[in-house]
Length: 519
Image 1 (cartoon, rainbow, N blue to C red):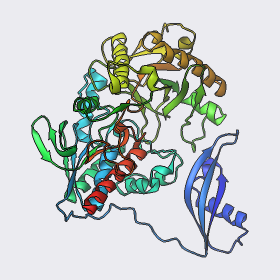
Image 2: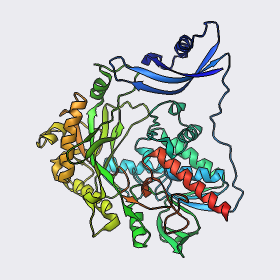
Image 3: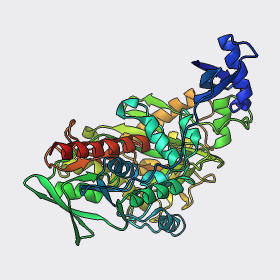
């Protein structure tokens, strides 16, 4: 017999199977001499009261032994058909699309403008240490996409997108910890993701797929409103009738290419603001109601939102025990993002604090569908100029920003390229600056101690999502105008993170399979 129940345990007992079994027996009125096995299904932290506990959902096996589950890599499945599809981009959408195509007996040809995870590290070091941005290989572009070196959060708010557990299980098969199957807000960590991504790539190739690096999409050949081929690096032509466009939210050259070719795109809302950094100990004290965090609890996180008198302001991509990273894709930009290693053991907590923008806020007749993209770009370039013309980020202490005071000194920061004291109202448009000032005041009321001059704002957090949507048919997933073109995931405006991007990649692959079968 199997029963599913919820139990609440102290942090030090979160992994104690004996305590779990005892609590299960007590709750289900099971005699002490009856053998039970307790299997954890999900767990989350409840920090609403001073006594912080873990809420755990478990299966209780009564007089029964649960079957063993295999977590190893899937067996190699050689592609037996001559059908193929080109996938542009080796981020989570592209990789999961490739894995799904293999299941469907269709050869994936993945073309990635950036480098593999190993070689990509050199370019990240160049950004951090020498302030040199490689426009093809950086925190946004390269094997694994933006998530590989900018955190690896695996949380999505809705199961309506697809089978979230199946994506998590796939990640475990390729080397992720089984903890991601249990945690309410799973996280792999930037230090561990590269090995998992490489294992995926090697599996794709072993099954007969192709993965090409330093392979930038430079044109899409369309005849009679249907894809016929793609051009790589301005010379190589790959003939294909099916292209999954999974290029990510920062591939501005792709947005321009589509616009120039008359392939329909449209401006979409996005958010823009700053990345704020606090001492992690302060966030722990606020969230766990303590002077010092229990060693059995992870570094605390937070989620905040406020509807100001101007615009909504909210926290985005919060990274406990994390690091702020330089994520520009061009030399004359400054862009910030955040990430955490698997242990989340750095002394700082950072989060995007951003303002939600509607198309009307940045609509420009000169740029049309690209208005949001150029709006982002202009602010990033101003941040670069005011930061000193390097990858140093314009920065201001939190209270100083709220009360219109340029910071005379700045605290230590995890942002390796460095920070420069600037009045951030010179970087940010007035609507955004005023919304942030009002929102941060309210956040200080919601989290006592959050509003402090020990926190520092780094500008600019601008790549929260794509400023462009590439419209597609809801049923076929094909572009509304060009058959065989499958706009996919974040870059096309249909996803917001690793999980939703992976699921969208799978759905595009399934759509291609259905079309092929119909033919």
